[in-house]
Image (cartoon, rainbow, N blue to C red; front, side, top):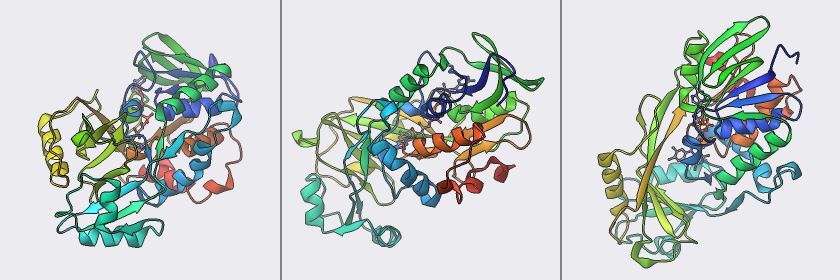
Length: 370
Ligand SMILES: Cc1cc2nc3c(=O)[nH]c(=O)nc-3n(C[C@H](O)[C@H](O)[C@H](O)COP(=O)(O)OP(=O)(O)OC[C@H]3O[C@@H](n4cnc5c(N)ncnc54)[C@H](O)[C@@H]3O)c2cc1C
């Protein structure tokens, strides 16, 4: 890669996508990350449920997740951290009218096992045995330490010489000579390659570069934290939720996080909860359990950003030299981050892409959306 200026690669966005990619590129290129907020990981990456579910999200997501699982399980020495995964499990339940959906889940994923209602209650004793019709368990679902992953990558990138500029919103982008001129809130930067890892704002970044959008749409997803229901010790409970993904709940520091599994399309913004959406979601959760919601201790929302085909976007834009997309991670951007970062770093560095990505590259290529 021939440098035109200050740096080889500017990564726009300091979320899990941008920081993972920066860490992996920083071994062989000069990298600058520009992040609009005062800290990295402020938006979607700090608001996830931090779960790794190998069977979640369709075949491309499944393949990316599988490619990154060993990295999360036994991180490379350079990351200077022990495992980022810990046991959790995912328990799905079917109520009246949802039995067929359960059959579809069981048919699609051989690793998922059907449980009796008693077995489901052994794992989550607050479930209402009179309303649960069927249950199944995905034993391979694990917690991801998302913050430790982000911080480990951030430290690695810095050790390799990467600059990470916060409060540096990108306000302008144009081709200049053989590279890019990037205006940011803390001054201009020039680079050979721009990586668009701005999460919900990726189409806005494209517009700054005079590129038509790819049709990425942010969707709000919310969460409420409740006191441990009925005073139970929830720490060993699996994540549990409706087989149709109309709500889910997950232990979180001795309390229970409940999400309405909402998916409302919204423009990019600093997301916050909608009281009605949260209340309706908590009602759906309450219908499945015997302990009522007594209070909400705190709540948050974040944006899950999807491409029109709900497959992430990784690759150079064929319309503009040196403009690279790392976008559309949807609801799987933490569990897919190792594989997406590795693929992005290989493509950006002009290296041979590992053969494991052979069947995925075209599926992820931005050209499919242009
Ligand atoms: C409630 C919820 C639960 C989730 N649960 C899971 C889960 O269990 N497992 C999982 O794998 N995924 C989950 N996800 C999805 C996951 O959080 C996202 O896919 C992932 O965080 C996206 O990362 P990102 O780096 O692309 O985006 P972000 O983290 O949003 O980062 C983008 C960054 O770009 C910056 N930026 C934007 N515009 C500019 C600009 N002009 N200049 C400079 N910087 C800019 C933003 O400030 C932001 O920091 C969940 C998401 C939500 C909301």
